[in-house]
Every structure is written in C-alpha cells, then in structure tokens.
Length: 297
Image (cartoon, rainbow, N blue to C red):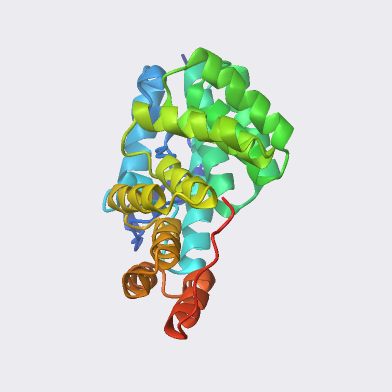
C-alpha cells in the first residue's frame, strides 16, 4: 500500500501535538456514557500500520491528560484552540492516506471527528461524520450510540428512539443503551415503562449513575421519598459530579421534613457546581424555611 508524501503543512499541524499543554477537569461530557473520543482505541478498529500510527499520534497529543476528560477543558478559549488543533491534525493525517486505506481506519477517523463535533456542540456536523463512520463500519456500536445521542440532543426524538431500539435488539444487556431508550420512553410520558427499563438497566450495571438519578426522580414523583433518597445517594456515590443526584436527595429529605439534611446535600452539590441555578434556588428556599417541590423527572 502506497502513501502520499506528507506535506509541509501537514508536518506543521502534526508537530503542534507534542507541545500542547491542556488543563482538564474530570467532568462528565455525556452523562452515563463513558465513550473514549478515540475511534482507534476500539479493538475492533485496531489493525494495520496506519492504525498504529494514528493511535500514536493521538497518544502524543493527550499524553498528559485522561482520555475521557478531553471534552472538559477548563477555559473556553483553550478548549476551542485544542479542539481546532486536534481536528486539523486528524484531517491532515487522513489526507495522507492512500485511496485503498483500511475501511476500519477511516471509520475510526470519522468517529473521532464526529466526537469532536459533538464536543463543540456542532450536532449536524457530528451526525454527518458519524454516518460516515457507519458507512465504513455499519454495525459500529459507538457510532450508532452517539448518532442516537446527536438526534436526542437535536430534539429528533423519534430518530433517536429508533436507533436506541435497534441497538437494544442487538445488545440487550447493554445498560447504557437501555438507559437511553428508557429516557425516550420518559419523554413520551410512558413513565411506568421507563421506570421498568431504568430498573433493568440498573440490574445490568449497579453503578449506572444516569439510571440512579432517573429512578430517584421517578420515585420522588410517586411520593416514595425514602426510595428516592436511596437512589439519589447511590447516584452521588456512582458519580460525585451528578448534580441532579444532590438535587433529588435534597428534595426527598425536604419532603420528609428533614430540612437541615436537605440543605447539607444542596451545599455538597454547590461545592461540585457552584453556579448551578437550581441548587442555588434550592438553597434560598431551604434557608428561608420552605419545602422543595417534587421535581418532574
């Protein structure tokens, strides 16, 4: 397999990678979905020489940073700069590939570019790139899942539900897929169906923070505040950054006339997310001696 020579422009872009210093937060880019942003990390896409080179390229780029924290940069300008540099590097590398490059490699590159677009909030572009990945690897789990998430975030709920249902049929024991499908049922106001799905997702993965948060809210909605508190506490243990877990716990405690404990959970949540408007409003209500209304999940 022949490769085109690397141009000076390409060399310039790739050389930027070794010098970038990225400060990161261990934050949750996609709640409940821990998806590495590198397509070639997926064993199903590992393979030829180009794949190894591409992996090495991205490893150098993020050598000092947790892989899954790439989408949680502290400074917006720094975030934009790093996204742009990495996108240019991937595209520059892609341009060096021979026409008959392994489709798995092209699928991984398209997946990476799609994840970058999601991180930037460019959902239409992300969907297009993820569909490109699926043209090269039609059954790629991560590409399908994230395409569903793109549709969900774009409020194309029918399309999202269709993808999640298809994935659930192929991966019935995936807690992540079942959680996304349950969220779609909840949007359609099929609350009992959603509740059962969230419970099953939790049986598949007892640390599924998104399912725990949803069950906490649904139990609170039913007036079962003891179970709401239990699920919310477990959500916080599973993901200490899950602000809705603190919110749901505080509401449950407030409704059980345990306002002092409710305020403690609000304070804990504000230490995680000091600017969270809901938690700040809850603090004002509880400090004034009020009772938090039960949230709608």
